[in-house]
Length: 250
Ligand code: MN
View (spheres, rainbow, N blue to C red):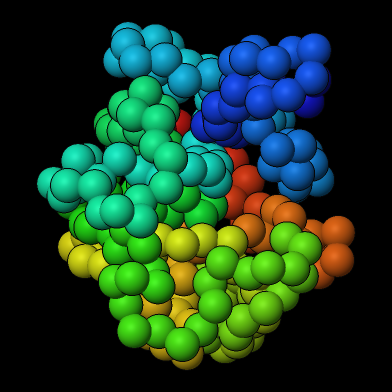
């Protein structure tokens, strides 16, 4: 293996088989598109199965150079001090616990973080922000954020804020993206700057340019890459930042 390559830890998802010969089997997994985009960026992907013990999360973090928080089901609203709204989707508190540990340890050990969809929401909650538990019931937007077409298809416009890292990555002030979420940031955690918004004002991206670097988007660029190659730029940039942090001896 190329010793210069960096290892990107990817947080994992949970599934119970609902039919077939494996009925009831519990699985921990990631969608393979996350593996593909990290490989294409020159990184080494490593899945991080979720466990509740902080000591295990710390051992996992010692193996990686950067953290990718993947998409998935809703964050437990108790994490950000709210009771469950009737429209809250499924939650899995064990995964929340694990990812909160990973974020805390990444900060302590100066390792960059990239958040995708739920990853953005988890980061906002981890740093003291809150979420709309269900966009249609808690906002008055007239934009559809839970699209009903194939996941790779772009359905809404995202405006990128000039001067942000995200805007520099894409070299544009506007993108068309997919949208696969029914929750969104309500109160932004104070450490973050908004770098992307839809026309209804909902937040579609956040960043913290401080050390260690954090960037997150609400859409799923990894699902779009095969059809919109420029979405790979986000992962290329992240792996580059992780390599710079590693070389910095931190
Ligand atoms: Mn959206």
